[in-house]
Length: 483
Image (cartoon, rainbow, N blue to C red; front, side):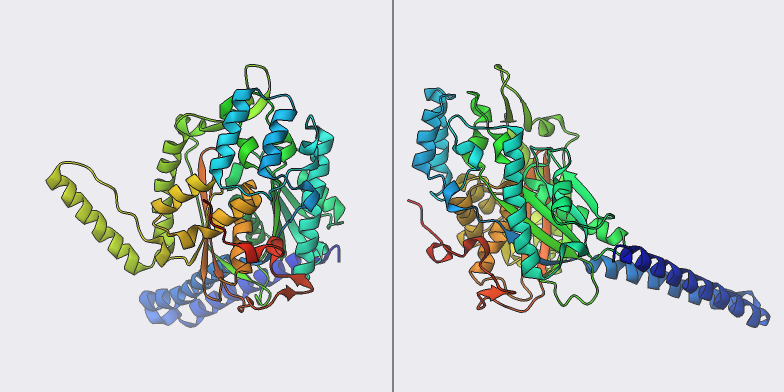
């Protein structure tokens, strides 16, 4: 079993070499048999098999790209003992002694306006007074996040850890040695040739990048069947204990959570739940203002925290305009593309006549996707982004409710939103799901999935595991209405 992948790769290589030899012999036979047909005839007979070879190669490449699919995913529901109600959190801020009255007041206003509920979670280290933001606590938090989520994933899919060829871990603020992906490979006794990758500093956009990296590894290694993408944020080391208000927002929004997704290029596709339709990535890191929109540094007292720079909202808007233009070309149906072009032309004619600018029209992305997973940045930002995309309250519901129940879990938030829609029984076969993420840099990434598995919204269990995921005990309470 340890050499299975190498033997498969060798067999594929031998088959490719045999095919090449057969094609060369066929070319030689054509030239030998058609020597008397003249130059034009020889060229015709020569080009036919060559063209067939090129078309076959192109079709195989497209088929390989189209075969990337999502087998299933799992999201961690932390234990109840780690719950941190809003009132308890605000009292915690006052008791730990590192914040002044102005900082506590600022965080109170942000949290109360954010739309966050009373059942989010902090890691054990931040329940202490004072918080125990140590390396050892961060490692323990990683174990607490990764292992239950992966156990659930392997149980739901029936795929053993020994069949996984690559592990991609997204965690922005914490880099361990050995790496976080090595911790997972060691825990599950994965093969010695497993590819392990760590993504750090990518922010909330890392989940989509991780899927893209995993898909690239699967395409590059024909013998590799499965890759795991783990997304989490180690909140222990992201905690800021200073007084700089530009660094306090992470304390307000970020909470404990973890997701694990299993992607594959295995032929047959009988066990695939979603097909990867499109991956679109846009970054503006070459722009200094964009680059400095969010960064980790020390304050005047030497305390490290993550700073949101001035004008970050404007830079995100510019980034999304560029990203959505690229994305729309690949996912919008032709009918909507033509309608959008006509709307742009009318807008420009009107501007020339009126001599003043107006709101630039946007394509209707609801023509390309039925379900939307949005950046989990609090109720005001979710509403602003959703309205900018032309979405209604129904399309924004998953993002709003996931933030209310779990807070911002960085790259894992998109998967909690998809779990919400599945728990509600809304994602049916043939439906398209768009996951949009924005991260530091700045960068915007989109994954577009098509549901290919049969509808199972009436089933509450699969492979002995609940299909309701982290929403199993509370989905009946949602959606909630905030006053």
